[in-house]
Length: 223
Image 1 (tube, one colour):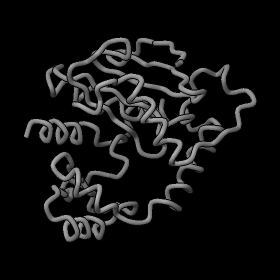
Image 2: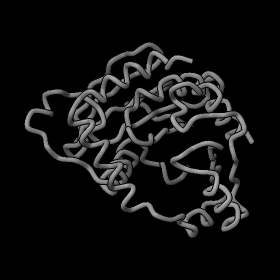
Image 3: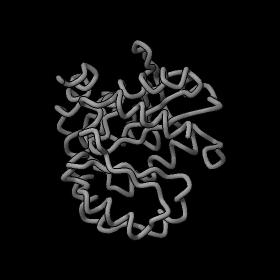
């Protein structure tokens, strides 16, 4: 069972959970975890997986969609400093596979029908404070190493299988995902919608480009 506590945070509700002993944070705009949104946008973050980085994007997307969709972000396991009573003596670090299973557990627990259906923003300053925790940094670095070891090539079969449900958005100057990757997916799976950014959006879009990315998401959802 998951322990949880909710704290109102402006337009965003912050939930602290423990799933299978894994410390987790969920941010919600619109309907929250205790409700059953008919329409939901779920953000699964990159690395670091601190949910608060996505707060501004969430709020803007919610407004662009006229409140028709609730918007949630689920942190990575142990990429948060909530529930401090859990942390003393806590040493475990989570691999990429652990984080994938963590998201599956979240979906199965909280979304039962999921298979059917120029200075940084202030919220980013608050989110970055969470990176000052040694155990959060430990989990972030371990996940990064695990990703580099295991994610070595494009899974063409998966992209082709879900091509009608995907929009792949690539940065034009992104060292983590260079233009060659965009060219490669267009060559290997030409039927998927792969878009190269023309707006100078950074890899860490949550820092300075939250609103433009939210606008693109709203457009893709409506098309």
